[in-house]
Length: 429
Image (tube, rainbow, N blue to C red):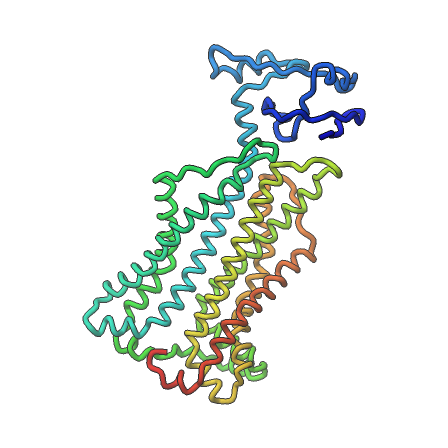
């Protein structure tokens, strides 16, 4: 196979491949190995020949001091510590991106688990009453509820370890020119313990307060499983009279669970902030990219990591939106049944449930824009990073709103199909 040389357009035939010298200034791009005669023929006055010589010192630890004391403009010395540090920079930025992404994922995971637990508690209110009626103490009830979700967290940790071990090699190759592919990283007991501890901590933080609240509920109230009466204010009632039925129902549903409203808004904020960070980094790489030049492998690696994090965040936020919608359906089944008995149509009920989620998504999307800009500034380490244009920021927020509307439509439609008489008669609904 003939390839064009970098000088004078001379073609050379490839005879094979070889490992490079890993010199810090040329370890990322590919190299062409030539014979001595061909290399000398390509040398010019502005680009003369350079030679590489490996030296082994009696005291390897003094390599940095040796290079600093004897290096000149024509004699460039690089210690093995400097080479190791240079090679480590290829993955350092990826590690920083993974750390920031892990914190974002942790916050979103806590919000998702809290919403899921809240929905489960709403479904199990009467079961809690039955458990307390047969002699279960509040401590036993809380322990049962905690154990259920902690067991699920352990199963999720095992699945996460398996997926992470298989996907790690995709992110651990610093350059495309590396011969071969890195194998799967070793899975140590420390790594497994840390992952399991984080999973249990997330589940515990999200489950503890709802479990304690459910355990403290009186036996009679838990068995009755009465709907929670919202606080009514004269001004709000007067204003809501002029609203369309779906928006009126959405506001009432959102006001019933303010904590759920905050968690849903927080998840949207984190998602929009992550999307804006990826857009900012993409724009930075586009600004610094040389037309027709090679792709910077470090930038490509960081971009790949951020894209993976953004995809995971969006997927987790989508799951969270579905959980929030279904929890709203379960928690508000009786008030919505009463609204349908008073004349609200099935379509208005479904639109009202979706409107409740959009009410929380709107402030979350708006707050996500400055949060994303702040996240970009925090990760710039004092450098000037370009902010995405206004249309890009607006598209990220509006796109998130549209996705939330689409995701909430399905569970809202399913929840509005249940017959009114069945809901009002049921004791376990």
